[in-house]
Structure formats: structure tokens, C-alpha cells
Image 1 (cartoon, rainbow, N blue to C red):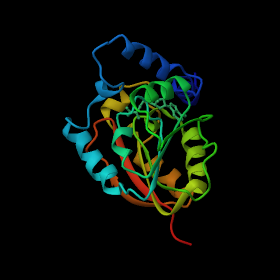
Image 2: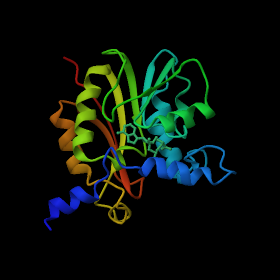
Image 3: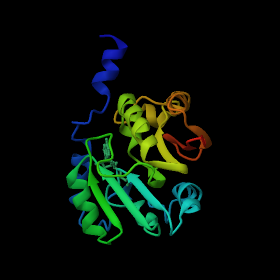
Image 4: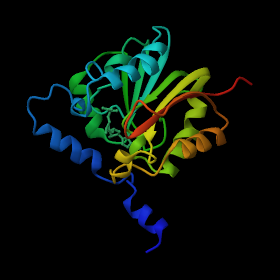
Length: 218
Ligand SMILES: C[S@@+](CC[C@H](N)C(=O)[O-])C[C@H]1O[C@@H](n2cnc3c(N)ncnc32)[C@H](O)[C@@H]1O
């Protein structure tokens, strides 16, 4: 079997039930307050706290609009609620239902998407895009489509923060649910869409890396 075929078979697909299975497993734990905290609570875990403070809190603005891709139970969404308006898009309605159980506020708008798109979101309307725990599972084609689609909804000067799988790290290599990606590949994809990379952290997370980028002014 060729390496490419093997990679294709192992790569998580949109139709994969990974996220529904994880939600089902977590629902057996009746004590969990919010789905996703078992991956680490940014209020308690120092590394996640660093991500929250440096890659999310810095961009909070009560006059701006934010969008989160793949909110799950709202582990990070809860920190975005100080924005004027928050959109969340998720491929799985079940996960959006889970989010709604935890948060029901009028300025939070949940949208079921088709895996890479932003249905109903106006062009040039988003100041801040955030995604954590999602792109680590997405294959290159899906990441590429998302990067293309984010360009039209992002306002000039807006920030995009994405955490992605970093297979240069042992913990990512050991996790078959993590997609084939690394800082070199991610930079290449991001730059190929005309974005400017503003900031990267390659060390704080043990299985992934994080990047902040924007669209250069025209
Ligand atoms: C592992 S959970 C992470 C949830 C949350 N971001 C967190 O860190 O706790 C992945 C989330 O991404 C969603 N998801 C998976 N593939 C997606 C895609 N192509 N587009 C949008 N959301 C997706 C899942 O349904 C789930 O809500």
C-alpha cells in the first residue's frame, strides 16, 4: 500500500463520526459541567490559559463581531461572549444542540455548515475568527477550503487564530485522529491564500501549534 493511500485512509473525513462518538462518550460522565473540559480547562491549565489570554482575550472588543469554527460544548465560546455578536459554525447539529444547552444568549448565533463554509454570514463582517480543537482533525483539502472561504467574511485588519495539528511533535504523531500538518505546511497554505502571518507559537502546546494571521490591506 502506498504511503499516500495509507495517509488517505487514516485521515479524518467529514463523514467521520469521531466528534459524535466523543460527545456520546462524554455524555456518560454525568458530572462534567461543560462538554470539552476533559481536554483541559483554560481557567485552570496554564498552557491553555496562555492561549486564552494571548490569542483570544487580546482581541475581545464589545463593538466587534467574532466567529468560532467548531465550538463543541463552548469551552472557548464562553470567553467570546463579550463581543457584540458571536457566530459559531459547526458541521454537526448535535454539537450545536449541546452548545445551546449551555449557552442561550441573544447575541450568539449558531449555524450548521457543510464542513468548510459560512452560510448566511455577510462578506466583510467578521473581526475575529477563532478555532481550537478542530483544525487538528481536518485534512489539508478542508483546511484549504476554509482558508479560501474565510477571506470573504473577514473584515480588513481582522484577526484569524487557528490551532492545528503539528506532526513534528510526538503526541500528534501518536494520535491517528490528528491530521497530517505541521508549521511548514500550515504556513504554506495560509500564505498561498494571500494572508499575512502575524504571530505563531510552536512550543506552548504539546501536540499542536497555533497561528494568528490577517489579510494585508489593499
Ligand atoms: C474536538 S471538538 C472541539 C470543540 C471546542 N472547540 C473545544 O476546544 O472544546 C471539535 C468540534 O469541531 C466540530 N467540527 C468537526 N469538523 C468540523 C468542520 N469541518 N467544520 C466545523 N466544525 C467541525 C465538531 O462537531 C466539534 O464541535
